[in-house]
Image 1 (cartoon, rainbow, N blue to C red):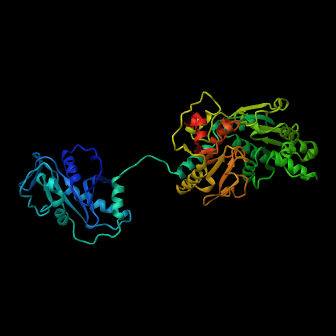
Image 2: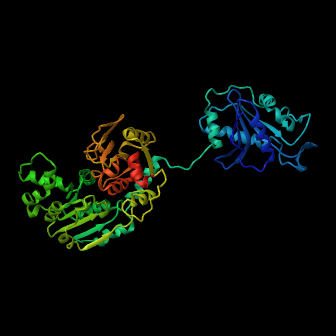
Length: 533
């Protein structure tokens, strides 16, 4: 007998049910039995089947268990000398009819069914002769021999009718009984919750924009996920709606592309990376553009400032700089010259500064009269946000959060690529969409083995600045994905102590996740970072 629960009966005050459970657990029968199957109908009826037994070849049998001394005198049933409100089988008969209705509602072809009684505390040689009970009552003497007597009870109680070939009804029985339930939230709901958390501007952020009013020049600081980009883009929209030509500048092309997509179709608004703007200005001025290399990119903003600034009337009314901690002196010079004495707003998080020698010029800082702070992080789940903080704040907790927000995978170095592929495919199988997943390498482009891939197993992958990024899994470096976010961030190629500014890299990568971060580390890298051990 396959008996559920398998380890011990469900909690019950009935000693008789415990006795029958013990007897059924020893019966060598190829059936399935469920102790205490409870139901509640849409109409509000509630009831319980003491034991529901399923034989795939014959149907189902409900056993009603009555403990104590059961007697029938003058046509009336009593239990331990007290009158019973109904005949022994009545409760089970009502239950089984509702059970069959539940199976039908679940789309199951229903099996034949019947009801019998067990009086585990009663000894008798002759069973009750009532017309509805003949052959359908078992007592204490029969319990040691259930494997021989129960089949006959089953035959008498359950009509010999066709049994459905499909076993869907058996699966539904187990579902109704409720084998196991562990609280969890599916991927789709977790993503929806993260969207609600990260998109909503809280009261303080709205107040910032309201208080800002017509403030021409301001500095806004806040940690990763505090909504700096949301406020920056909302500021751009409001000023454009008021008739101002507005330019949004950031450091990475991928972030600029994402913001420009939000601005599409809105007049007087443009989003671009600062160095792409410099290239565009140089091209527009007719300057010769050499094959880009590191030297070219390091100097392009300064060159555009010196050689290709647009005329005064063609410059924007407001320049909004996002991720300002990444701008170098040439980038700041270009932004400042474009803004002139007009509007300039700067958004930054100094804790995400990868280049420690880059800073807001003091002369420019002095002109930014408005000072605002966004203190609360919205992007990451709270446990992940606290853990990410430990990479920039020595006093923050280093405790690993729950696996649903931070999963750690440690493997041999030559297994990293395969583990990444497995995690991507696992997320997709669980219902995540490709555009909700990013693989972030901490090693940078030159050392990464993943950055140049176009496929991860059978899954196509692209970079964040690709036109296809909106519907593909993205593979990126931590720097190129700055300012962006996705529900599921797989962080890998850690490089351990061999990479510079490791803590900053990890902080940036962890704070990109709105639902879950998955860290895939080779053993050496995991040992080098005590927070992952």
